[in-house]
Image 1 (cartoon, rainbow, N blue to C red):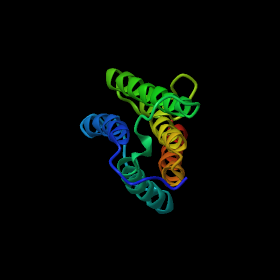
Image 2 (tube, one colour):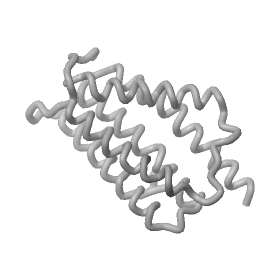
Image 3 (cartoon, one colour):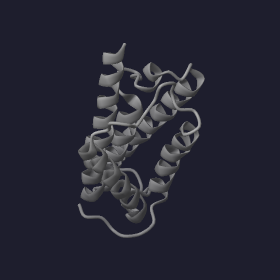
Length: 159
């Protein structure tokens, strides 16, 4: 469960699919979005989780394809969630880009923009049997999903 060092092209693909819409988002933020007043503890978890998840996704070759087994279902589930994440972004970019669009659910998954990538990396960790990515994605989830929950709560309260 510790992992084998080596480049992961699957991890690299997952990261590219994560980073591209986020880079586009920097120029298409929702109306009224602010990162002010974010909980410093959640922000620490988010940043730490981002760094650890990125490193783990790239440096363990265990995430690369290695034939069919029952473990491949974990990879399939992770890929489905990444695809859902991309579809959520497409829906967001086509929307009026309001805060309600940004904090929306997708196919019943709440706060999909935060939840889907975290769960997909968690499942990728299970597929690769790499505890470090599993732990990194939990740390990321505490911060990233927590911050999105905080923002959504403030948005709902301000309505």
